[in-house]
Image (cartoon, rainbow, N blue to C red; front, side, top):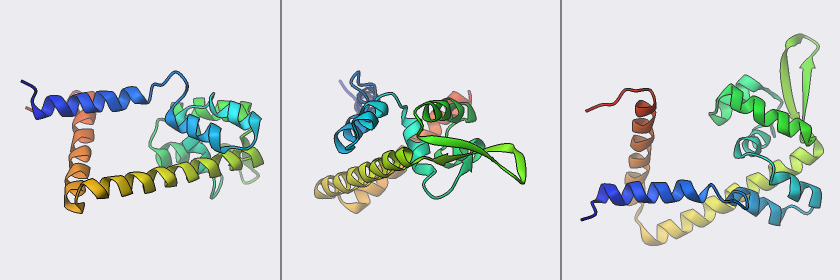
Length: 167
C-alpha cells in the first residue's frame, strides 16, 4: 500500500527529474523561444540556472561574487563557475573600483541585460500561470499549508545534509 509520504517523495523525485531534461531546463527552453537574438538563443542552452539567476540579480547594480552568492543563495564557488561562463559569453563584465582594487564587481553587458529581462519575464509568467492554476484547485489556506510543508521539508533536507538527523 502506498502511503501519503511515499506519494510526496515520488512527486518530489519527479519534480527534480524534470529539471534534468537533455534538451535543457524548462527555463532554457522558454528563453530560447522568447529571445529574438539567435546567438543568445544558443547561448542560454550553455548556461546554468545559477548563471541565469546571476544575470537577474545584476539588473539593479553591480555586485561582488560574495554578494551574488548571498542574493541567490548559492555557494561562492557556484557563482565563480557561472560568472566565468557569463564572462566567456560576454553577458557580464568584471571590474574593480578605483577605491577598492581587491573586490571584483560583476555588471551586465547589453546582451546580458536582454537575457536578464527575458529571464525575469519568464519567472513572472510562471508565477502568474501557477498562481491561477493552483487557486482554481486549492484554497488560499491549502496553499499556505503546502508552503509551510515545503519550508519544513527544505529544513529537514538541510539538517540531513549536515548530518543532524532528528528522530
